[in-house]
Image (cartoon, rainbow, N blue to C red; front, top):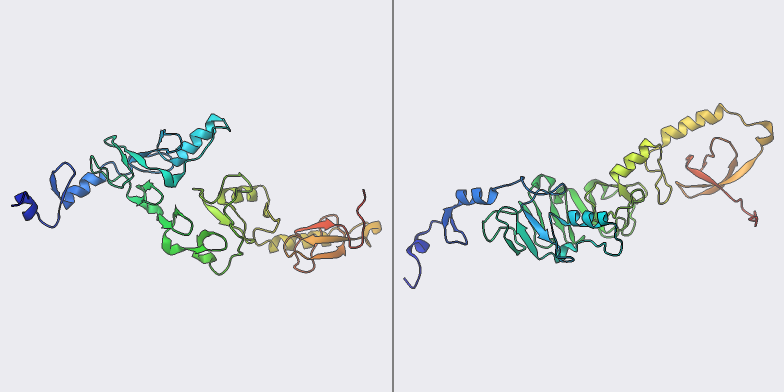
Length: 293
């Protein structure tokens, strides 16, 4: 039969052939490929392979494990991060075979990651994260592609709830978090988009709130609705009259929220912007005043 095995001609459509020539049906193949699922990996990802870092030729569970190991060495001259798109070799966690990047192990046929991105050389067994690849970002993200849109000006994927209601800041996440200084664009931590358009880790924002800090570390605008706080300050100021010598004192302020500068009545507690009613203000030099040397 021209060198063809009779089994090749008679094989049912639901059968597959492994690399070593053993024939199994599709249900058996699913069992083979599903071995060890969610049992291997690191604190960052569940996966059934390790990567060989192209930058230093060392083996790590993932790129984050590599980067953390480099940081712990404390050698600034040797510190480097894995260029994710340049990873070429992986090592199967089950059979230990080193091979070119692919989803299915060429030796034992196990699936090395239920989610696999050939562009990012990325594997993850925990598909509940809703991973998807964004071509515009150039990396994989989580949360489900149906729930996000890519903002061309901000240069990042945002939740669709922000599609028509966020302030654009060019390349908003291609910078470090203003609190912890970790790079935001490819961070695995949740990121919050502030009302002003700047970004930071959600965890860092919550930490700020625990310390009663409610302004953006980058531009000083309020990060949440402060109307209740302003009403409370109104009551405190009304209940705290200034001494007679200060009752006619006026100062110039700049509002951090609306950007308007104005001359207002001085008060020891706070200065209110009469344009937007915010107390998120700072005292500035008055118009026509010279700066002392």
